[in-house]
Each structure stands twice: as structure tokens, then as C-alpha cells.
Length: 172
Image (cartoon, rainbow, N blue to C red; front, side, top):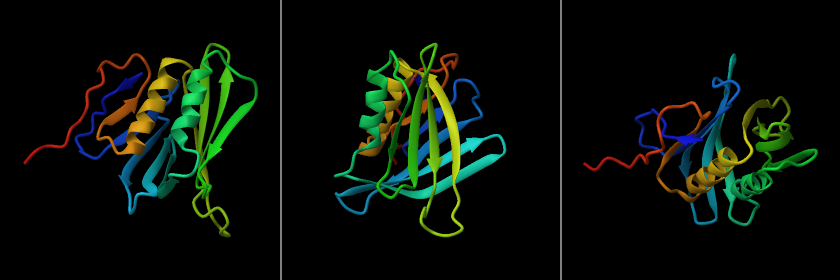
């Protein structure tokens, strides 16, 4: 389920929280672009004892985007065998997906900045979401974020109390 974030910052962001453990999550934030060929953004991973961030993940317009990958997962809400995966062309962000009985999708989000540099680091968290509505909402939210539409979105487990509401920039 997608709900408004409690943060008062006016920057667009998408936060995915694990339905099994709300302290595990992924945030897409700090979106910017230098030109019409790419979108740059930060990705943060959180889990008990772990905080990791890559400040400049790049999505190129000619590459396969994260949103279509998530949309395909949402379309296959009845499940699939094995693991499906996606990664940026720089390989600093990767996502793998598995389907488990009960209609849930496990998304393992992996950050590996500078993957070819000796002494680099990597971190991963896994978020579990419902295969149908939650995956479809996540795919739409990521598409909006990458397109630069100014909404603050948080994917949370269904028991969260507040419905989605767009956060618009404050006019001065």
C-alpha cells in the first residue's frame, strides 16, 4: 500500500518498507539531472544495524529502467519460479525478486558503488511486499519519481493509517 511520508522536506522521494519488518527499508531521493539523457538519484538502505547510501545512481534514457522491471513483477502477481533481476548499467544498484507462497514478493536491493574498484563495499536489504496492489503501487511510484513528478511517496504495510496525499512545493 502506498501512503504519504511523514517527512516535511519538499524533495520528491519514494520509501519502500518491508511489510514483515518496518525497520527494513529503501529510499529513493535527491533526484536531479544534468541533461536530457539521464536521471541521477540517491538510494538509501536501512535495516537494524545498517545504513548505506549511494549518492549518485544514474538511469540513462536508453537503458532498461527500473519501473518496467517492477511493472512486470506486478503483472505476474500469481507468481513465478526462480529469481528475476535488474541492475543499472553502472551496476551500482541491483534488484533481485523472488515469489513466495501466500502472494508475496521479496525484493533484494543491493548497493555496490564503484564495483570494479579494489576495496569497494556492498550492502543489501530485502523488502517483502504483496504481489498485487503493493507491487503495482511501487512500480507507479518509481515511475513518477524517475520522471520527476513531485510527490513524496512511502510504500508501507497495509495497517498504516494515512492514505496517500501529494506533497506539493510550498509557494512563497
